[in-house]
Image (cartoon, rainbow, N blue to C red; front, side):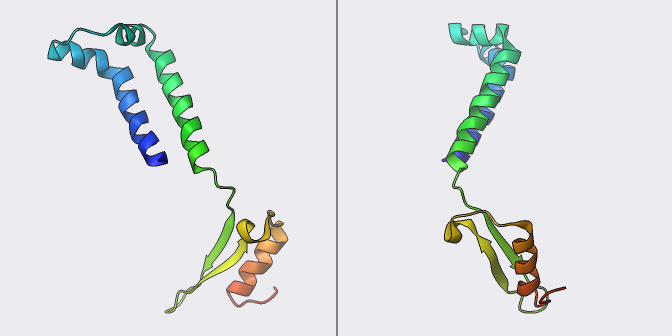
Length: 109
C-alpha cells in the first residue's frame, strides 16, 4: 500500500509541475482545480509532498526494531542480535554491541 502511495505521489508531482501544459498540448480544457493548482504551484507541490510523506510513513509504521548481523566467510550466517518485536523494548547501545560481538564470535572485547 505504501508503494501505491509513492506512485500516486509521483503522478501528483507530475500533475502539479506540468499537468496544465500537458492538457493544453492535448487540447483538453483545464478543469478549475488544475487552474487553481497552476496559479499556486509551489503550495500545491508542498501539499502533495507533506501529505504523501505522512501517508507513506503511517502505512510503513510497524514499531519493529531489529538488529541483524551477517557473518563473514563461506557460510555468511545471519544472526538476530535484538528484536523489539520479541522483547517489547528498545535495546541499550551496550546490548547491541554485546550482541554483535557474540554473533561474530568475538565474545567480549
